[in-house]
Image 1 (cartoon, chains in turn orange, cyan):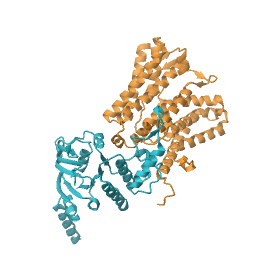
Image 2 (cartoon, chains in turn blue, orange):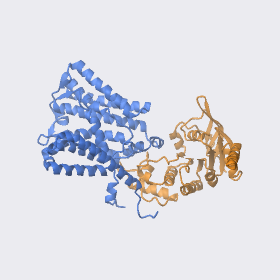
Image 3 (tube, chains in turn blue, yellow):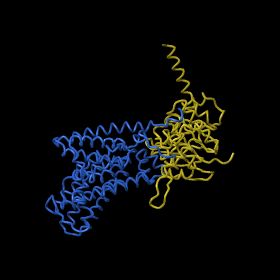
Image 4 (cartoon, chains in turn red, blue):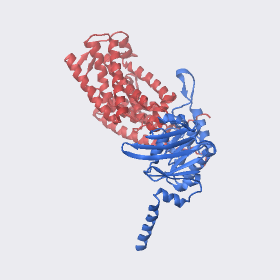
Length: 335
Length: 263
């Protein structure tokens, strides 16, 4: 049996809405802003935004597919940045200690989130809302206590700078873009080709049936929370190294932006449906809208309006495509 | 016939001060359908949960093949070949037939860290398993489970359980949410499972469906087995009366008739 590719078959895929949305915004900005944003300099501007967002959006999307949510990522970005800056900047320790500490705290917060969710049965929105504020408090309190400032400088040289926080290809593209592409490829394999991906979808579809089928749902939930918190800490850490400083504020925008990217990407909020490629497209779509506005004559204040409309449009379109997927039956066998 | 595959001996269950099941003794043999009848709240769900390892009995013994065998978890029950299929099939509406069939035991191809899910093989096996149960309308393993009818979903879940070596099939109200035609489908599949030598525990409150497939009937009232009889020993009216608590059904009928007469 050869896998036949048909229009209908493509539209039934979870990423169909995201792909069409992306094409639509590309056409929109090509008409109103010219082709500048598709030239290398213009592309770098939205690829950088997409990369930082995408590294967080994919693990967050996997959590959403499994039926959970993690909004503490908004605090984990400054937490990761500040940990690196305080350890390697303020105290002047080797950068690798800062890097591992930032990632280690990511793992720790992820474990706490996951543990609370599986043990208390409190919705993960509430659990991670709590950890969002708690971690924000820790970042602000500890930073001011230790450094007497809300902004900490960090100077990095050598391989760590090149790996985590430098520009590549002529000095405009952040190295994060390469991380993002590499991680996306890994996630695609993990979610859509390895057998584990099936478990995430099963968990989001029906947690009790999944557990009865022998899937270690609790361990998987923990793992996904660790993944999202660590990814956010990773992005923060890289930003601190890139910009040579870290601020206690900022990062909250990642909460809504990554949820928008995930939902535009075709992930069902209640779980059980979605794809990594969809989230990838959703992330690019979001980045193109926020950055593309600079290449048009529009006042950039309008960009939120476009994002809002885009989000609603994408959700409606995704609902339609999902219904098509559900009602699909091969025409040959008569009813 | 041989020993019962699954037997409960004087099983009691209480949640704190509330007694839910009293002295339940039941058994089901290979190739036999045991129908558990009971009104809502009679303790059917608790009984299923004890048989499928979700709850532990407060006292009493579960025997498998005549040997006492506690079922500490759903996993332990499925290792003993006890599979439970719930009202809505316990399947995943937004997953493909092939993927949901193999949840937790995905077939793979390739080697080492590059093992990938073998979609083609999964789809082929799943479709074949379902078609062997007479559901020939399912012929594409990429279809989403949510697009199947209720009866087809039940059939998929039953085919899945049988494929993975179930010996005892516990069906929790499989026909409750189905139309007449769909229910007939499911009943036919229950018969097919029985023909293959599975022991089936069929939970329902629809007497008609029970009588169509059952060999052995047990009526639960307020957590106790109120009647235990073989096929043909009681009429449909008698069973309905039993389920509703005996005389109460008759008095209800009389009441309705007198109201009709007044109107």
